[in-house]
Image 1 (spheres, one colour):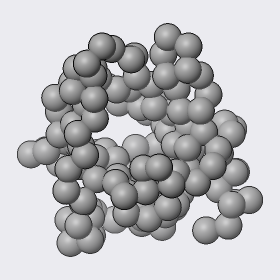
Image 2 (cartoon, rainbow, N blue to C red):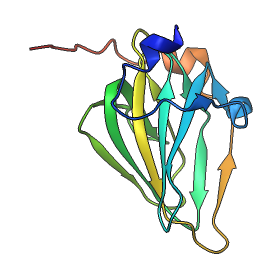
Image 3 (spheres, rainbow, N blue to C red):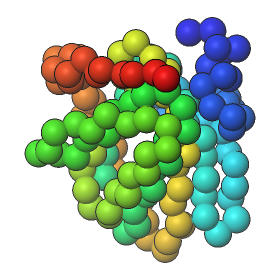
Image 4 (tube, helix red, strand yellow):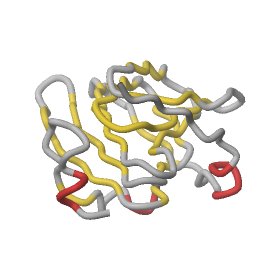
Amino acid sequence: MDKKELEKVSDFPLGEENVAFAPYFIGKSYLGLLNDKEVSIHNVTFEPGCRNNWHIHHGGGQILICVGGHGWYQESGKDARLLKSGDVVYIAPEIKHWHGAVSDEAFAHLSLSVPMEGSSNEWLEPVTDEEYNMMPMPIIYSV
């Protein structure tokens, strides 16, 4: 997807291609640092179909604030949840989960986390194409 189009997904800066975490994503994502004082805030933008691997936040949770497009969030053992701008997801520590864009639309969320001593991310297996393609085709209404 064209970078200029991705910049329109949200009002927050797109940032740079997320090459440091690329091994943990299927597809291309972008990461824009918004704040690193006390609470870490990043704008994460996913190209259509992009998603991160299953992962766990140890020692501290994460909050996602959806700011553009449509995406998916899924906890292990539960149905995936369709996300839209304005949705907020709290992810408690030690919960195996993944998140990313729907197949035909880019998606952006703000990721908030409080740095805590000993906290870490454990990156796990990818969300396979088979798993991802089992997501229901979202019905998205525009007004």
